[in-house]
Image (cartoon, rainbow, N blue to C red; front, side):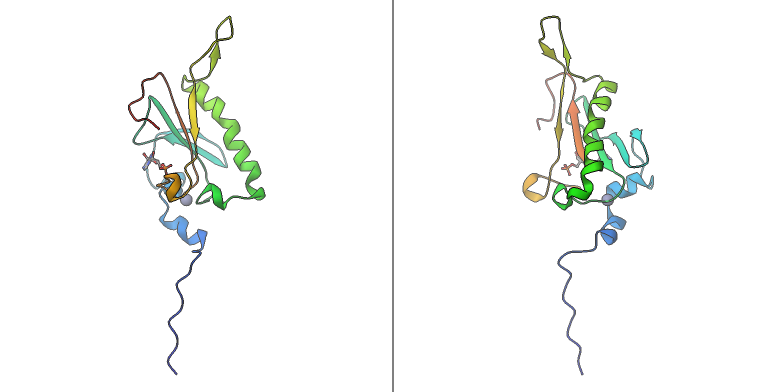
Length: 140
Ligand code: AMP
Ligand code: ZN
């Protein structure tokens, strides 16, 4: 009897996807990057095409494609990522500071693009940290 053609998977196994994932390869040091921070769960490196004087990408080492693929089980790592942003910003000279009368200076954007309509190009969750003195060449 002729067997039916198997249906294409509509929800590919994320573990299979990670073998082709650029940022998994960066996390595994199979592709070089300018690493600025690393611990057991997270990696931060310079964006190869910076939109501003400071442009870092912060990723979890474990593959997650988008923010939409996260749930409550990711709360700890997401919190850790966000909590690391001020430290990275300070180390790269774009911390928000206040003068004597409380006027703020410095600063940065944090950005997570999700899915095609969100402008995501690399399907491994990442936080952009974009900052430094304006004007910025690439407006985001
Ligand atoms: P997104 O559009 O949010 O998915 O952003 C992907 C970012 O990854 C872009 O800002 C790219 O410039 C950056 N990028 C792509 N390839 C590399 C790479 N090999 N090393 C560092 N950054 C990269
Ligand atoms: Zn990945």
